[in-house]
Image (cartoon, rainbow, N blue to C red):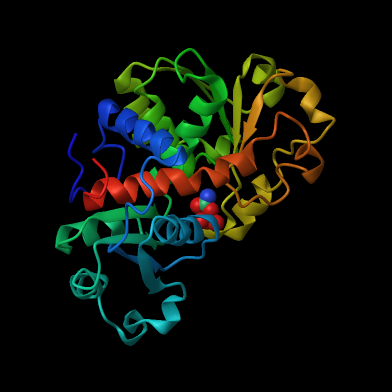
Length: 305
Ligand code: CP
């Protein structure tokens, strides 16, 4: 399968065999099959929104395989601040690197960047739209834990309206034989275009506001933060803030074997007392960001085939 030069923007562009290929390569990377594979490769890391995990794991991913990175972590230090367009910035930066990773507050920004870039562009989150590399590490983590994805009941809980990780993950899961349980306040239900996509794919999914109703049936509970920064009206945020909290007490409504995931950062939706439980796999999930992003960088630069 040839990924060389391919941008990773949305699950609308990735077929199931491509997803499975990336997961297979991640397994190989994690087992040290490609030491030094990215030597001589340079990543441009352009973050126009805050990030800890995505930015640092991309930077770490390329360094650990012998490559280099440079970039923008603070948009106020770039010429965008002087009024340069994103497209002009990308047309310039693509001459300095082998691949570009971009996070941007506007939906569609990564796609726009890929249209003018001579190098592959990787979407590290575009507004409330998609976060495909997060989803690939989510899928990898599920597969690592269960040995499979098919047959699982996967609950996505929290901000399904603005949460790009939930959007990407629900779309990717539609390729698998899973049941998706969407748990959110009514105000934060998954947007209609993602719902239409799920309906069109024929996947089984249900929507509810009650974790108590569905908790015992879940194999995975994927908790998300309510995305305060995406609300136009903070009074609307106040109506839903703190809607769900996983505590030792609320663990009682869940399947005792459930695996709890979270893309992080978290606020108060998972109490730190949960971290010590075997159910909690969100830090292992975050650590899988390294091999997944190494595999992606290797594939799109042609260093890994
Ligand atoms: N999960 C995730 O995207 O985290 P960061 O915002 O810290 O990159």
